[in-house]
Image 1: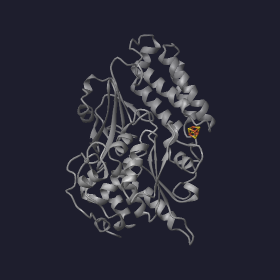
Image 2: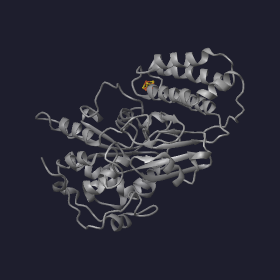
Image 3: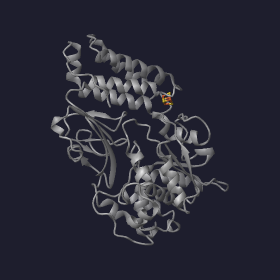
Image 4: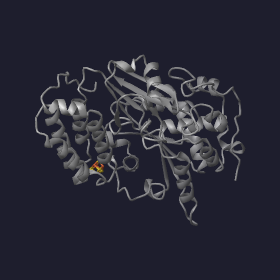
Length: 417
Ligand code: SF4
């Protein structure tokens, strides 16, 4: 087995970034020369397949939602690429679609630090011994990505593709479908992209922030990566803190406390009603003494998902906001699977009735029944994520549910923006 450090070579070393500020070191809207000044250059040609051991040792997990171990995804595509005499070279796709309406972290990264992402794409492609690479981004961030690509000669083979502006467009199989000329709709979930993804090639789809960490990992190594965060959640992650008059992107240590993140955003946690963590497929929590980590007990931690932390102020009704979000999610069904197409719509209708003050105690049981019908029945995780978010709302806002059922909720029914 290759030792982690044997796969690395930083050509013009600069001191590694200290502390939890890692991804935006080169400053606002950094060009390639600022990027090199901040991070030094790297010899991507020196990155060998043994780099997968580095990624494994780092403990890096995906920053796009599922928090899957990054090395496993890379290894699956690498192994599929190496099978058989005529096996196809793998494809690397940097996913910056960020369909989640409350999330801006990937847009911020691509706008201000595109070269950190491009380094990660080059490193991942080198580790998989391929030159087939795409960067899939929104119309908003495309100009920044194109400028960055034009600035360097080593990234000309990375092809930019524009993502549709829908919630589902960032789902990995929808990304593949779109790049190969189809609609950005999820494919059959039984098909493994690592075996047969883009045009049948083994395909690695990683979130752009995940790739940014991979690029830095290749420069500065495992010990540096793990020097921030905790053993169960090493490194840093980007979060978008939104709601209650704020909308900002922060880089925080792994396993950070919700309290700490909120205070860093200028928000007093004691003044909040509840927090939705992980985005529209996330989990409502209150009180707020949780840590943000993909691994550990759900009693004490909440999974970061896409890194969204939406704060609910005391004058907002959590049920009304949940109804609005579910309404949106029902509208974002790709309308390929019946339970998703009809079930989410029915859930949104029941939540609206509850939020509007209909005093029928059977509404909660109906929501739970619909949740059971819809879960696990889609070609993608859209229905499951929606059901999880709604279930957490029923638990977190159980007092509010009772208030609604006796007609006593007086909060202003303000939305999510
Ligand atoms: S589960 Fe919903 S969003 Fe996912 S593919 Fe089926 S219809 Fe589309």
